Image (cartoon, rainbow, N blue to C red; front, side, top):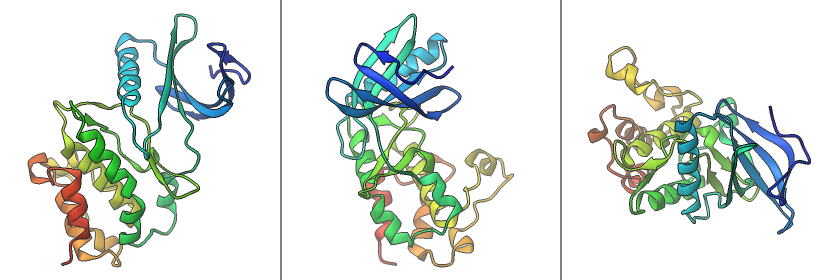
Amino acid sequence: MPLEPGLLLSDRYRIEQLHKLGSHGAVYRAADTVRNLQIAVKENLIADPPFQRQFLREADILGSLRHPSLPKVWDFLESEELGQFIVMDFIEGENLSDWITHDSLPADELVFMLAGIFDALTYIHSRNPPVIHRDINPSNVILSPLGRPFLVDFGWASPAGRFDARTDVYSLAATIYALLTLHIPADALQRAMGREALEPARTLNPAIPSRVEAALEHALAVRPEDRYPNIATFKQGLAEIP
């Protein structure tokens, strides 16, 4: 059950209201009564050890990162009675998944708007070891009232290993494709089995420049070795003059 408003965690963090509820976790708007600041408290809803270890990994990874387009983690709480919680910045703003039901921005404006996301991904990929987000999608990008984009939800993040920067290149390209065309691109696994094909972006939105369509197709290649090797080269491909 969701935490009750007014509950005080660690004699400091007061729950105000449920902000977002998912299958694995809940996010609450809360207040840090010591610093007198609004914060977010993320709760792990799955008590199984693998999920508990992943939740702790998320806290460790995000807690080690400092970037203007990433939420900052302030605390990690764990108790047998209440469970696990990550205390972090509350990101006020608009979830970009809502944009897919509206008119899209021109491609160059969208890429410019998402500059902070490109920079944040370049930053986490340059860590030692590199951090791979693994879950970039419109619902995990928030645009603040001041226009700064934030990349949130590091629940599937992991050090590079089975996954590398090309995993996030693909997911970021799929996000941009969806925001420009108002359609979700065909699933990579279905494409690999020949069951679906990637519809050219300009077929869905003729206003998309040809260079952007080509860059998206390159980044959305089924085989990782056929994609851009990193976020910087993907961004360059989006911006190149045809």
